[in-house]
Length: 547
Image (tube, rainbow, N blue to C red; front, side, top):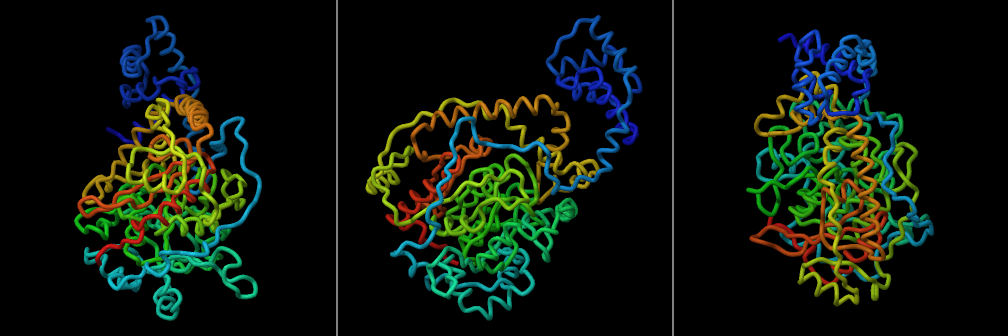
């Protein structure tokens, strides 16, 4: 079959269907599936297509439809113009997602910025004799040998920075610390975030991005990223005096923990993958290779590796942290957040990277106020069925109450992610540059998913987002006066944009387990405060793998 002819005829049929007013049904994709490379649309084709689409037209309607389709204007030129625009992965759409339900009042009062509590029980316990700070280049060699994981490529100057900076080496294991104020006094404001690393989908001037793709497709697809502005999240962290030690591994095109022909493994169990797609940040932070790392999440890519590797990961509310400079997978679901050893560290890093930057059009200017030493007694929290955690949290004076979440049909609109991802990687999909990812070792489902998403009608995508807002409103109403709930529903809350934090809660057969708090929209303060209180009452986050 002539692929060029097939593609041309498909575009012709889709254009004709749209002109005939049928772009809102499932018929276009079904018709393309049965029409193949025919030059004329027949009634028989339409009958087969309507069966695939679950539609029912009368014989007279089908006849008129065939006549209309065969006589409609050809829109191939429109589609060719669209593709010739070369919309790179970094181009934002004009339609902007806002997860705030109607009637919700956003916090406006600006209070204290995150700072260390006066007493940190764990500050001097982080660095044990079995977990020294490690050199970035040594990490890369160990990774290549398949023995441990962490940075996939040491950045230029990182080795020299590590050798010359005693403070950096001391903090690789301990994480962020209070920054010096204008006069050089420590504790005047939050900041000072040395020993940082970021997953390979985050870019800045200098080191390339590979997005975990073995054929360097990610680098090609991301080459349109606009670096005229330096105000990306890595630059924000750098202005907080973070030293960017390395770029870290990630699952191929933000899925799983397989990348560039290898697999990122958990430092707790080298026979087990570190989960993903923020695989490197989870493993490197747990292993003490960096003080903290920056991950991204579309549907579990911060929370899942945080659980697997026993670190504390914060997935912020959608619209909190700019995605400028990051690989786009889903413009309405992508989020950037810190992966650290403690909730307190997450608060410090989050404060440095959150807020509008004028480059990501989804951001809202909502204050982040957090005080680790604030009174927690008497706050009403919704908590799940983790008995050990409940006992510890009740001991903090927190009121516990049951919550029954409504049955929200989030599964029916899950194709939103795949549809947006297909648009983000449309050019390499059409050029068949992704096909190699289906084979070992990546075994990626993205190539087929992108092609399947080609047959999602535009109206169904818009209807799904309308239902999405109803789900957001229903969840907002269900949470009511509660501050948070213990538990996790990654599919639901990544669609609604709610924040979540995952922290270590113990071990099962040698691998970490986690406790998760899901907050209300822009409720990072509440989940961080309770997570911090839980960690001050327990020592799960102080454990480290026996490397």
